[in-house]
Image 1 (cartoon, rainbow, N blue to C red):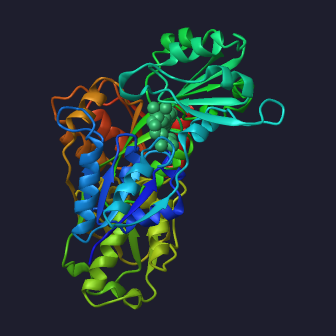
Image 2: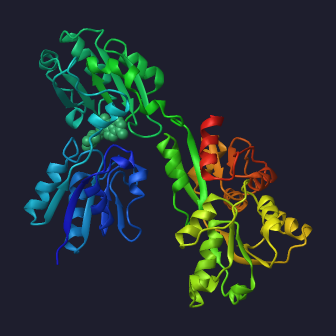
Image 3: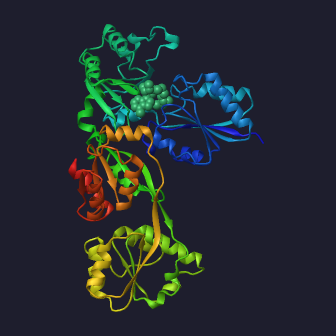
Length: 492
Ligand code: SAH
Protein backbone atom coordinates (compact mmCIF):
# COMPACT_ATOMS: atom_id res chain seq x y z
CA UNK A 1 0.00 0.00 0.00
CA UNK A 2 1.40 3.44 -0.82
CA UNK A 3 2.02 5.72 2.12
CA UNK A 4 0.95 9.24 2.75
CA UNK A 5 2.67 12.56 3.43
CA UNK A 6 1.46 14.84 6.22
CA UNK A 7 2.86 18.32 6.02
CA UNK A 8 3.12 19.55 9.62
CA UNK A 9 3.87 23.02 10.94
CA UNK A 10 6.34 22.64 13.80
CA UNK A 11 5.77 26.13 15.15
CA UNK A 12 8.49 28.67 15.89
CA UNK A 13 10.54 26.71 18.43
CA UNK A 14 8.82 26.41 21.81
CA UNK A 15 7.63 22.77 21.69
CA UNK A 16 4.43 23.81 23.47
CA UNK A 17 3.44 25.67 20.30
CA UNK A 18 3.25 22.51 18.19
CA UNK A 19 -0.46 21.83 17.63
CA UNK A 20 -2.14 18.78 19.21
CA UNK A 21 -2.89 17.44 15.74
CA UNK A 22 0.73 17.96 14.66
CA UNK A 23 1.96 16.12 17.72
CA UNK A 24 -0.36 13.18 17.01
CA UNK A 25 0.84 13.01 13.40
CA UNK A 26 4.45 13.03 14.58
CA UNK A 27 3.80 10.23 17.08
CA UNK A 28 2.38 8.07 14.26
CA UNK A 29 5.17 8.77 11.74
CA UNK A 30 7.39 6.09 10.18
CA UNK A 31 9.63 8.72 8.60
CA UNK A 32 10.14 12.40 9.41
CA UNK A 33 11.70 14.77 6.87
CA UNK A 34 12.65 18.01 8.62
CA UNK A 35 14.12 21.45 7.95
CA UNK A 36 16.82 23.48 9.65
CA UNK A 37 14.42 25.73 11.54
CA UNK A 38 12.66 22.94 13.43
CA UNK A 39 13.80 23.29 17.04
CA UNK A 40 15.67 20.50 18.86
CA UNK A 41 12.87 20.38 21.44
CA UNK A 42 10.35 19.52 18.69
CA UNK A 43 12.77 17.07 17.05
CA UNK A 44 13.03 15.23 20.38
CA UNK A 45 9.35 14.27 19.91
CA UNK A 46 10.13 12.14 16.84
CA UNK A 47 9.49 8.50 17.75
CA UNK A 48 12.68 6.48 18.27
CA UNK A 49 11.67 3.95 15.62
CA UNK A 50 11.00 6.54 12.89
CA UNK A 51 13.49 7.35 10.12
CA UNK A 52 14.90 10.85 10.64
CA UNK A 53 15.79 12.63 7.42
CA UNK A 54 17.47 16.02 7.86
CA UNK A 55 17.10 18.10 4.70
CA UNK A 56 18.14 21.31 6.45
CA UNK A 57 21.74 20.91 5.47
CA UNK A 58 23.82 18.50 3.45
CA UNK A 59 27.47 17.55 3.89
CA UNK A 60 28.61 20.80 2.25
CA UNK A 61 26.40 22.76 4.66
CA UNK A 62 24.10 23.89 1.85
CA UNK A 63 20.41 23.08 2.07
CA UNK A 64 19.23 20.05 0.14
CA UNK A 65 17.77 21.35 -3.18
CA UNK A 66 13.99 21.42 -3.44
CA UNK A 67 13.75 18.75 -6.15
CA UNK A 68 15.89 16.39 -4.04
CA UNK A 69 13.50 16.96 -1.10
CA UNK A 70 10.54 16.28 -3.38
CA UNK A 71 12.18 13.04 -4.51
CA UNK A 72 12.77 11.94 -0.91
CA UNK A 73 9.11 12.57 -0.03
CA UNK A 74 7.98 10.59 -3.05
CA UNK A 75 10.31 7.65 -2.36
CA UNK A 76 9.40 7.46 1.32
CA UNK A 77 5.68 7.54 0.53
CA UNK A 78 6.02 5.00 -2.29
CA UNK A 79 7.82 2.67 0.13
CA UNK A 80 4.53 2.61 2.05
CA UNK A 81 5.65 4.82 4.91
CA UNK A 82 3.60 7.26 6.87
CA UNK A 83 5.71 10.35 6.21
CA UNK A 84 5.66 13.56 8.23
CA UNK A 85 7.15 16.55 6.45
CA UNK A 86 8.02 18.86 9.34
CA UNK A 87 8.58 22.56 8.70
CA UNK A 88 9.30 25.48 11.00
CA UNK A 89 6.40 27.81 11.78
CA UNK A 90 3.52 27.34 9.36
CA UNK A 91 4.32 25.35 6.19
CA UNK A 92 2.39 27.73 3.93
CA UNK A 93 4.02 30.92 5.24
CA UNK A 94 7.19 31.20 3.18
CA UNK A 95 7.73 27.48 3.69
CA UNK A 96 7.36 26.13 0.15
CA UNK A 97 4.62 23.90 1.54
CA UNK A 98 2.42 24.65 -1.46
CA UNK A 99 5.16 23.65 -3.91
CA UNK A 100 5.71 20.32 -2.17
CA UNK A 101 2.02 19.48 -2.12
CA UNK A 102 1.66 20.37 -5.82
CA UNK A 103 4.46 17.93 -6.58
CA UNK A 104 2.81 15.19 -4.50
CA UNK A 105 -0.51 15.89 -6.24
CA UNK A 106 1.15 15.50 -9.65
CA UNK A 107 2.61 12.18 -8.55
CA UNK A 108 -0.61 10.84 -7.11
CA UNK A 109 0.58 10.70 -3.51
CA UNK A 110 -2.02 11.16 -0.80
CA UNK A 111 -1.35 14.15 1.47
CA UNK A 112 -2.66 16.27 4.30
CA UNK A 113 -1.64 19.64 5.79
CA UNK A 114 -1.57 20.57 9.48
CA UNK A 115 -1.01 24.30 9.93
CA UNK A 116 1.47 25.59 12.46
CA UNK A 117 1.96 28.70 14.56
CA UNK A 118 3.91 31.08 12.37
CA UNK A 119 6.95 32.92 13.71
CA UNK A 120 5.55 36.08 12.12
CA UNK A 121 2.97 36.22 14.89
CA UNK A 122 4.53 34.12 17.67
CA UNK A 123 8.07 35.58 17.76
CA UNK A 124 6.47 39.03 17.93
CA UNK A 125 4.10 37.87 20.70
CA UNK A 126 6.94 36.39 22.80
CA UNK A 127 8.75 39.69 22.28
CA UNK A 128 5.78 41.52 23.78
CA UNK A 129 4.45 42.81 20.42
CA UNK A 130 0.78 42.20 19.53
CA UNK A 131 0.73 42.27 15.73
CA UNK A 132 -2.53 44.21 15.70
CA UNK A 133 -4.00 46.56 18.31
CA UNK A 134 -7.03 48.82 17.91
CA UNK A 135 -5.04 51.89 18.92
CA UNK A 136 -2.13 51.31 16.56
CA UNK A 137 -2.79 49.10 13.59
CA UNK A 138 -5.68 47.53 11.76
CA UNK A 139 -3.83 45.30 9.34
CA UNK A 140 -0.93 42.88 9.36
CA UNK A 141 1.36 42.30 6.39
CA UNK A 142 3.84 39.45 6.28
CA UNK A 143 6.59 40.12 3.77
CA UNK A 144 9.65 38.21 2.66
CA UNK A 145 12.96 40.03 2.92
CA UNK A 146 14.64 37.41 0.79
CA UNK A 147 15.55 38.43 -2.74
CA UNK A 148 14.77 35.63 -5.18
CA UNK A 149 17.80 34.13 -6.97
CA UNK A 150 20.25 36.61 -5.49
CA UNK A 151 18.67 39.67 -7.14
CA UNK A 152 17.61 42.99 -5.64
CA UNK A 153 14.70 43.21 -3.23
CA UNK A 154 11.70 44.15 -5.32
CA UNK A 155 9.18 45.35 -2.79
CA UNK A 156 6.54 48.05 -3.19
CA UNK A 157 7.55 50.20 -0.21
CA UNK A 158 5.19 53.01 -1.25
CA UNK A 159 2.23 50.66 -0.94
CA UNK A 160 3.43 49.40 2.44
CA UNK A 161 3.74 52.90 3.84
CA UNK A 162 0.29 53.84 2.50
CA UNK A 163 -1.37 50.83 4.18
CA UNK A 164 -0.29 52.00 7.62
CA UNK A 165 -0.51 48.50 9.14
CA UNK A 166 2.00 46.38 11.03
CA UNK A 167 4.77 45.11 8.74
CA UNK A 168 6.47 41.84 9.59
CA UNK A 169 9.48 40.83 7.50
CA UNK A 170 10.69 37.24 7.54
CA UNK A 171 14.14 36.29 6.25
CA UNK A 172 14.97 39.97 6.62
CA UNK A 173 18.22 40.09 8.64
CA UNK A 174 20.57 40.38 5.65
CA UNK A 175 18.29 42.85 3.88
CA UNK A 176 17.58 45.00 6.95
CA UNK A 177 19.46 48.07 5.64
CA UNK A 178 17.64 47.84 2.29
CA UNK A 179 14.26 47.37 3.99
CA UNK A 180 14.63 50.30 6.40
CA UNK A 181 16.01 52.53 3.64
CA UNK A 182 13.16 51.53 1.32
CA UNK A 183 10.55 52.49 3.93
CA UNK A 184 12.27 55.78 4.82
CA UNK A 185 12.63 56.73 1.14
CA UNK A 186 8.94 55.96 0.65
CA UNK A 187 8.12 58.52 3.33
CA UNK A 188 7.74 56.54 6.54
CA UNK A 189 8.63 58.53 9.66
CA UNK A 190 12.08 57.66 11.01
CA UNK A 191 10.59 57.70 14.53
CA UNK A 192 8.19 54.82 13.74
CA UNK A 193 8.66 52.11 16.39
CA UNK A 194 10.42 48.98 15.11
CA UNK A 195 11.85 45.82 16.62
CA UNK A 196 13.67 42.66 15.73
CA UNK A 197 13.15 39.40 17.63
CA UNK A 198 15.85 36.77 17.24
CA UNK A 199 15.25 33.09 18.09
CA UNK A 200 11.68 33.93 19.04
CA UNK A 201 9.85 31.70 21.55
CA UNK A 202 13.09 29.98 22.52
CA UNK A 203 14.78 30.43 25.88
CA UNK A 204 17.65 32.32 24.31
CA UNK A 205 15.35 34.75 22.47
CA UNK A 206 16.74 38.30 22.13
CA UNK A 207 14.90 41.45 21.16
CA UNK A 208 16.17 44.74 19.87
CA UNK A 209 13.63 47.55 20.15
CA UNK A 210 14.32 50.80 18.32
CA UNK A 211 12.81 53.08 15.71
CA UNK A 212 12.91 52.70 11.96
CA UNK A 213 15.81 55.16 11.92
CA UNK A 214 17.89 53.40 14.60
CA UNK A 215 17.04 49.73 14.08
CA UNK A 216 20.03 48.79 11.92
CA UNK A 217 22.55 50.29 14.33
CA UNK A 218 20.82 48.63 17.32
CA UNK A 219 20.71 45.21 15.66
CA UNK A 220 24.32 45.50 14.63
CA UNK A 221 25.37 46.39 18.15
CA UNK A 222 23.60 43.30 19.50
CA UNK A 223 24.93 41.19 16.62
CA UNK A 224 21.43 39.98 15.76
CA UNK A 225 21.44 36.98 13.43
CA UNK A 226 18.93 34.86 11.56
CA UNK A 227 16.37 33.53 12.40
CA UNK A 228 14.75 36.77 13.37
CA UNK A 229 11.56 38.63 12.55
CA UNK A 230 11.65 42.29 11.81
CA UNK A 231 8.53 44.22 12.90
CA UNK A 232 7.72 47.80 11.95
CA UNK A 233 4.75 49.76 13.31
CA UNK A 234 3.30 51.47 16.36
CA UNK A 235 2.59 48.14 18.11
CA UNK A 236 6.35 47.71 18.64
CA UNK A 237 6.25 50.39 21.34
CA UNK A 238 4.13 48.06 23.49
CA UNK A 239 7.02 45.62 23.99
CA UNK A 240 8.36 47.53 26.99
CA UNK A 241 5.07 46.84 28.79
CA UNK A 242 4.18 43.44 27.36
CA UNK A 243 7.45 41.51 27.12
CA UNK A 244 6.19 38.80 29.50
CA UNK A 245 8.50 36.08 28.20
CA UNK A 246 11.71 37.97 28.88
CA UNK A 247 10.52 38.62 32.43
CA UNK A 248 10.32 34.93 33.35
CA UNK A 249 12.71 34.35 36.28
CA UNK A 250 14.99 31.91 34.45
CA UNK A 251 14.89 33.62 31.03
CA UNK A 252 18.30 33.42 29.36
CA UNK A 253 19.66 30.80 31.79
CA UNK A 254 21.09 27.64 30.27
CA UNK A 255 20.77 24.57 32.46
CA UNK A 256 21.99 21.01 31.93
CA UNK A 257 19.70 18.55 33.71
CA UNK A 258 21.47 15.29 34.47
CA UNK A 259 19.14 12.49 35.35
CA UNK A 260 18.66 8.76 35.15
CA UNK A 261 17.59 7.71 31.67
CA UNK A 262 14.20 6.41 32.77
CA UNK A 263 13.10 9.35 34.96
CA UNK A 264 10.47 11.57 33.44
CA UNK A 265 11.50 15.12 32.75
CA UNK A 266 9.57 16.83 35.58
CA UNK A 267 12.57 18.87 36.71
CA UNK A 268 13.34 19.87 33.13
CA UNK A 269 9.66 20.80 32.57
CA UNK A 270 9.54 22.99 35.67
CA UNK A 271 12.73 24.82 34.75
CA UNK A 272 11.49 25.35 31.18
CA UNK A 273 8.20 26.76 32.44
CA UNK A 274 10.24 29.42 34.26
CA UNK A 275 11.96 30.36 31.01
CA UNK A 276 15.23 28.42 31.21
CA UNK A 277 16.94 26.88 28.22
CA UNK A 278 17.17 23.28 29.36
CA UNK A 279 19.23 20.48 27.86
CA UNK A 280 18.48 17.06 29.30
CA UNK A 281 21.35 14.70 29.70
CA UNK A 282 20.52 11.17 30.82
CA UNK A 283 23.90 10.12 32.23
CA UNK A 284 23.02 7.12 34.39
CA UNK A 285 20.71 4.17 34.15
CA UNK A 286 19.27 2.25 37.08
CA UNK A 287 19.30 -1.52 36.75
CA UNK A 288 17.22 -3.64 39.16
CA UNK A 289 19.14 -6.42 40.91
CA UNK A 290 17.12 -9.60 40.47
CA UNK A 291 16.35 -11.99 42.02
CA UNK A 292 16.15 -10.40 45.43
CA UNK A 293 15.94 -13.11 48.12
CA UNK A 294 15.21 -10.54 50.87
CA UNK A 295 11.74 -10.12 49.39
CA UNK A 296 10.80 -13.79 50.04
CA UNK A 297 9.29 -13.06 53.41
CA UNK A 298 8.34 -9.46 53.77
CA UNK A 299 5.98 -10.26 56.65
CA UNK A 300 9.02 -10.88 58.89
CA UNK A 301 9.63 -7.13 58.90
CA UNK A 302 7.91 -4.34 60.76
CA UNK A 303 9.17 -1.62 58.37
CA UNK A 304 10.32 -1.35 54.77
CA UNK A 305 12.40 1.77 54.09
CA UNK A 306 12.95 3.38 50.67
CA UNK A 307 15.47 6.10 49.84
CA UNK A 308 14.63 6.80 46.19
CA UNK A 309 11.91 6.48 43.59
CA UNK A 310 14.24 4.17 41.66
CA UNK A 311 14.38 1.90 44.73
CA UNK A 312 10.59 1.72 44.90
CA UNK A 313 10.37 0.89 41.20
CA UNK A 314 13.09 -1.79 41.40
CA UNK A 315 11.37 -3.32 44.46
CA UNK A 316 8.02 -3.41 42.67
CA UNK A 317 9.64 -4.89 39.59
CA UNK A 318 11.24 -7.68 41.67
CA UNK A 319 7.99 -8.41 43.43
CA UNK A 320 6.14 -8.75 40.12
CA UNK A 321 8.83 -10.98 38.69
CA UNK A 322 8.39 -13.22 41.73
CA UNK A 323 4.68 -13.50 40.82
CA UNK A 324 3.65 -11.44 43.85
CA UNK A 325 1.71 -8.23 44.36
CA UNK A 326 0.81 -5.71 47.09
CA UNK A 327 -0.69 -8.47 49.26
CA UNK A 328 2.85 -9.74 49.93
CA UNK A 329 3.31 -6.66 52.09
CA UNK A 330 0.57 -7.59 54.56
CA UNK A 331 0.62 -5.08 57.41
CA UNK A 332 4.23 -4.00 56.91
CA UNK A 333 4.80 -0.27 57.47
CA UNK A 334 6.50 1.88 54.86
CA UNK A 335 9.04 4.67 55.24
CA UNK A 336 10.10 7.05 52.45
CA UNK A 337 13.00 9.48 52.50
CA UNK A 338 11.13 12.37 50.83
CA UNK A 339 8.38 13.48 48.47
CA UNK A 340 9.77 11.89 45.27
CA UNK A 341 9.99 8.49 46.94
CA UNK A 342 6.49 8.98 48.46
CA UNK A 343 5.11 9.75 45.02
CA UNK A 344 6.66 6.55 43.62
CA UNK A 345 5.02 4.53 46.43
CA UNK A 346 1.68 6.22 45.77
CA UNK A 347 1.97 5.27 42.09
CA UNK A 348 1.98 1.63 43.31
CA UNK A 349 -1.11 2.28 45.43
CA UNK A 350 0.90 2.46 48.69
CA UNK A 351 0.96 5.33 51.19
CA UNK A 352 4.09 5.80 53.33
CA UNK A 353 3.60 5.72 57.12
CA UNK A 354 6.68 7.82 57.73
CA UNK A 355 8.53 10.62 55.90
CA UNK A 356 11.19 12.46 57.93
CA UNK A 357 10.96 16.26 58.36
CA UNK A 358 14.33 16.66 56.70
CA UNK A 359 14.72 14.57 53.58
CA UNK A 360 18.05 12.83 54.03
CA UNK A 361 19.41 9.45 55.03
CA UNK A 362 20.47 10.48 58.56
CA UNK A 363 17.03 11.91 59.39
CA UNK A 364 15.26 8.89 57.90
CA UNK A 365 17.48 6.70 60.14
CA UNK A 366 16.76 8.64 63.33
CA UNK A 367 13.02 8.90 62.60
CA UNK A 368 12.85 5.14 62.02
CA UNK A 369 14.90 4.42 65.15
CA UNK A 370 12.33 6.34 67.16
CA UNK A 371 9.26 4.42 65.98
CA UNK A 372 10.52 0.92 65.15
CA UNK A 373 10.48 -2.06 67.54
CA UNK A 374 10.80 -4.88 65.05
CA UNK A 375 13.05 -5.57 62.07
CA UNK A 376 13.61 -3.02 59.33
CA UNK A 377 14.33 -3.86 55.68
CA UNK A 378 16.24 -1.17 53.78
CA UNK A 379 15.58 -1.38 50.04
CA UNK A 380 18.00 0.91 48.23
CA UNK A 381 20.92 1.26 45.82
CA UNK A 382 24.13 -0.66 45.97
CA UNK A 383 26.64 1.44 47.90
CA UNK A 384 23.90 3.35 49.76
CA UNK A 385 24.85 6.04 52.25
CA UNK A 386 26.15 4.84 55.63
CA UNK A 387 24.31 7.72 57.33
CA UNK A 388 21.15 5.61 57.37
CA UNK A 389 22.70 2.40 58.69
CA UNK A 390 24.83 4.32 61.23
CA UNK A 391 21.75 5.98 62.72
CA UNK A 392 19.94 2.63 63.04
CA UNK A 393 23.00 0.81 64.44
CA UNK A 394 23.60 3.56 66.98
CA UNK A 395 20.03 3.21 68.24
CA UNK A 396 20.41 -0.59 68.39
CA UNK A 397 17.69 -1.31 65.81
CA UNK A 398 17.66 -4.59 63.89
CA UNK A 399 17.84 -4.04 60.11
CA UNK A 400 18.77 -5.70 56.88
CA UNK A 401 20.37 -3.61 54.13
CA UNK A 402 19.40 -4.87 50.67
CA UNK A 403 20.52 -3.54 47.30
CA UNK A 404 17.56 -3.62 44.90
CA UNK A 405 19.23 -1.71 42.10
CA UNK A 406 22.54 -0.38 40.90
CA UNK A 407 23.31 2.67 38.81
CA UNK A 408 25.51 2.46 35.74
CA UNK A 409 26.88 5.25 33.58
CA UNK A 410 25.15 5.00 30.26
CA UNK A 411 25.86 7.79 27.88
CA UNK A 412 28.93 9.52 26.67
CA UNK A 413 28.74 13.27 26.30
CA UNK A 414 28.67 14.73 22.79
CA UNK A 415 31.77 16.83 21.92
CA UNK A 416 29.58 19.94 21.46
CA UNK A 417 28.10 19.56 24.94
CA UNK A 418 31.49 19.00 26.49
CA UNK A 419 32.91 22.11 24.80
CA UNK A 420 29.91 24.16 25.88
CA UNK A 421 30.36 23.02 29.48
CA UNK A 422 34.06 23.74 29.58
CA UNK A 423 33.57 27.14 27.98
CA UNK A 424 31.12 28.02 30.76
CA UNK A 425 28.13 28.28 28.41
CA UNK A 426 25.89 26.50 30.92
CA UNK A 427 24.90 28.53 33.95
CA UNK A 428 24.03 25.45 36.00
CA UNK A 429 24.12 21.67 36.00
CA UNK A 430 21.52 19.99 38.21
CA UNK A 431 22.27 16.87 40.24
CA UNK A 432 19.53 14.91 41.95
CA UNK A 433 21.68 12.16 43.48
CA UNK A 434 25.31 11.32 44.16
CA UNK A 435 25.08 8.76 41.36
CA UNK A 436 24.13 11.42 38.78
CA UNK A 437 27.29 13.31 39.81
CA UNK A 438 29.37 10.14 39.31
CA UNK A 439 27.72 9.42 35.94
CA UNK A 440 28.22 13.00 34.81
CA UNK A 441 31.90 13.20 35.73
CA UNK A 442 32.53 9.78 34.18
CA UNK A 443 30.93 11.04 30.96
CA UNK A 444 32.73 14.36 30.85
CA UNK A 445 36.03 12.71 31.76
CA UNK A 446 38.27 12.95 34.82
CA UNK A 447 40.55 15.45 33.07
CA UNK A 448 37.75 17.96 32.53
CA UNK A 449 37.79 21.39 34.07
CA UNK A 450 34.65 21.74 36.19
CA UNK A 451 35.50 25.10 37.67
CA UNK A 452 33.26 27.09 35.28
CA UNK A 453 30.03 25.29 36.11
CA UNK A 454 27.79 25.57 39.15
CA UNK A 455 26.23 22.34 40.34
CA UNK A 456 22.74 22.75 41.78
CA UNK A 457 22.51 19.82 44.21
CA UNK A 458 19.41 18.34 45.80
CA UNK A 459 21.09 17.57 49.14
CA UNK A 460 24.28 17.43 51.16
CA UNK A 461 25.38 13.94 50.04
CA UNK A 462 24.98 14.90 46.40
CA UNK A 463 26.90 18.12 47.05
CA UNK A 464 29.70 16.24 48.81
CA UNK A 465 30.09 14.04 45.74
CA UNK A 466 30.19 17.09 43.47
CA UNK A 467 32.80 18.84 45.65
CA UNK A 468 34.85 15.67 45.46
CA UNK A 469 35.14 16.22 41.68
CA UNK A 470 35.92 19.92 42.09
CA UNK A 471 32.47 21.15 41.01
CA UNK A 472 31.42 24.42 42.71
CA UNK A 473 28.00 23.77 44.31
CA UNK A 474 24.84 25.29 45.68
CA UNK A 475 22.64 23.05 47.85
CA UNK A 476 18.83 23.09 47.95
CA UNK A 477 17.18 23.91 51.26
CA UNK A 478 15.18 20.69 51.18
CA UNK A 479 15.95 17.50 49.28
CA UNK A 480 13.03 17.92 46.87
CA UNK A 481 12.70 18.85 43.20
CA UNK A 482 10.67 21.98 44.05
CA UNK A 483 13.41 23.20 46.38
CA UNK A 484 15.97 22.67 43.63
CA UNK A 485 13.85 24.75 41.25
CA UNK A 486 13.42 27.51 43.88
CA UNK A 487 17.18 27.59 44.32
CA UNK A 488 17.75 27.94 40.57
CA UNK A 489 15.58 31.07 40.65
CA UNK A 490 17.29 32.42 43.79
CA UNK A 491 20.95 31.99 42.88
CA UNK A 492 20.53 33.67 39.47
N1 SAH B 1 7.31 28.95 7.75
C1 SAH B 1 8.03 29.78 8.68
C2 SAH B 1 8.87 30.84 8.00
C3 SAH B 1 9.96 30.27 7.16
S1 SAH B 1 10.97 31.50 6.46
C4 SAH B 1 7.05 30.40 9.69
O1 SAH B 1 5.84 30.36 9.46
O2 SAH B 1 7.50 30.89 10.72
C5 SAH B 1 12.28 31.57 7.64
C6 SAH B 1 12.20 32.83 8.44
O3 SAH B 1 11.24 32.72 9.46
C7 SAH B 1 13.46 33.21 9.17
O4 SAH B 1 14.38 33.84 8.32
C8 SAH B 1 12.93 34.15 10.21
O5 SAH B 1 12.66 35.40 9.66
C9 SAH B 1 11.61 33.51 10.55
N2 SAH B 1 11.69 32.65 11.74
C10 SAH B 1 11.47 31.33 11.82
N3 SAH B 1 11.57 30.90 13.10
C11 SAH B 1 11.86 31.99 13.82
C12 SAH B 1 12.07 32.21 15.22
N4 SAH B 1 12.02 31.22 16.10
N5 SAH B 1 12.33 33.46 15.63
C13 SAH B 1 12.38 34.49 14.77
N6 SAH B 1 12.20 34.33 13.45
C14 SAH B 1 11.92 33.10 12.98
